[in-house]
Image (cartoon, rainbow, N blue to C red; front, side):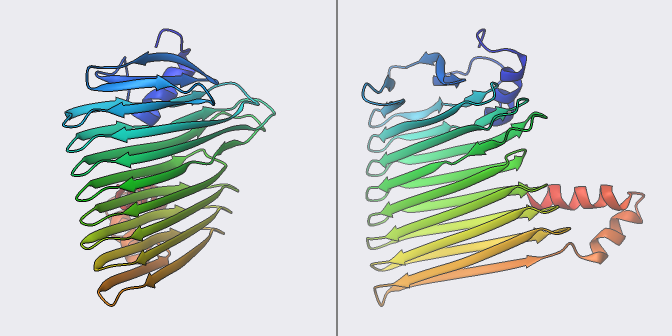
Length: 308
């Protein structure tokens, strides 16, 4: 932490809620290099030798422990691809906090592409939090392209919280998951774009075993001239349940495209997709304005509640 400047510390707080060195295992990356790394008795963080990135090895049976692996970038013109692999042992129960914050005050684009692969052992439980944030008044863009692969063994579960609320100019988020029997995946995406920003979210989930289930829900707001695309495909290859949902507010000249994809390859696959895109209801604004809020304040209240 002492190697970070004040901007880096602010970014760390935004993407990982860290005000100081976290408890437990962590790997903090700033401007293309590691600035802090700690392993624990049950969680080992090992730098890769053949490419940029780390292996996070969590022992079977590990309970109530956490791993923080945030990235911050404060220099204009940095572009990097990082590969992080998570090996979660059987019956483990852990929280993993990732995320990237970019502050770009220069003329060149800054880009971080994080490729995360999760190997979730039988009966293991994982909560994964990934937040993206951008700031800075430079002409250079803040670009984030996260790629996530999830391989879930029998009776495992994973909850993914994917958040991007401010400042990222361009992002393509690709998430692929393969679930064995009894595995359960829950995804909650929260997204807001403004200006001329562009955000693409792609989810591909294979439900490959009896009793596998997935619930993928996106809540988003598109403001100004921004563009969003939500593309979710669920493939049911056995007796399983799957649900995807896109719930979006469109404002100003924003554009939103929701693309449902359901493929049932078993008579016992039950798959559902829901989508709703619309503007803020006038009666909601009027109700809040009668309480003394301006129209702009009322809009912000509604958006903040919607994205919680």
